[in-house]
Image (cartoon, rainbow, N blue to C red; front, side):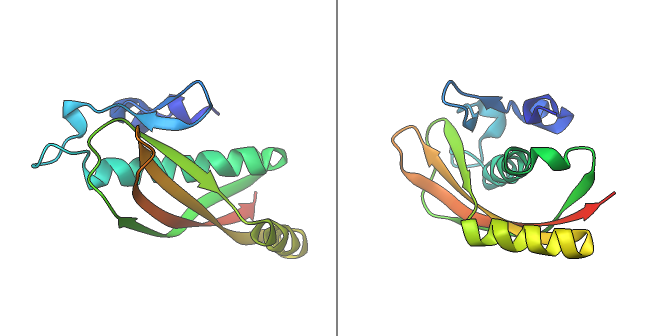
Length: 136
């Protein structure tokens, strides 16, 4: 499933840019009281990007496993005064550890790191999203 077609993602205006990154426009509907991108909008972008990254990492598990967000942490660093994009990643060790758990028990945990940047490349927030994935 393309993450941009998820109903909530449509509601907040999530789109994929030409380089494949997920992003949110600098839009009045996403602003907070000081006219910057709201923390909740940045969190939503990061969470959706972490889930999208799971699909890219483990395409063979689509429709065979259920991922559930277990834990998350996002630190806000700078105000976001422009369009923001998400940059998820997972460490090779974490991927290997997940596969070991999944193959042995039919379930596993993996952490996806996400940085949110503005159009100038400044990191506005960054965090980690832990996913619990269980075989159906």
